[in-house]
Image (cartoon, rainbow, N blue to C red; front, side, top):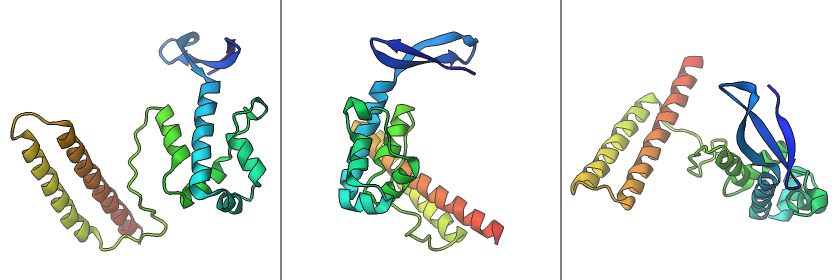
Length: 186
């Protein structure tokens, strides 16, 4: 599979091949690399500022100037981006995964972020505790659903509450899966 790099209005664009018709029929949509770069640089800056410049330098082993180049909008730094390992270290110390969420948004992927750090938080209980938590969460979801449909209309706020309960239910299922994997390997 090949990608064509084109200059459009003085900016680089990539033309992606059509999945159905092969590389000869390129998709008409063009991804503007300059816009993506600016978007990622904005989120890189938010990540560095979230952690703090001094702490970011210590975590990554990079100087303030180098970190600044990663989010600079100057033309001379347009092709410089923060390395993925540095992003991982910084996001481990940040309050929010800024760059990861930006990359997900670029692909229209929805991430569920609950603020828990699996490295520092141990999962208590086992599968039995997970089954109990699962039934409790499902009951809470059904309670929210019953409340939401009483008048025959699900409002935006009711939908948000249902979504929140669904995400919590999903987290219980993930914990249950991890417990089952731990038990199957030990």
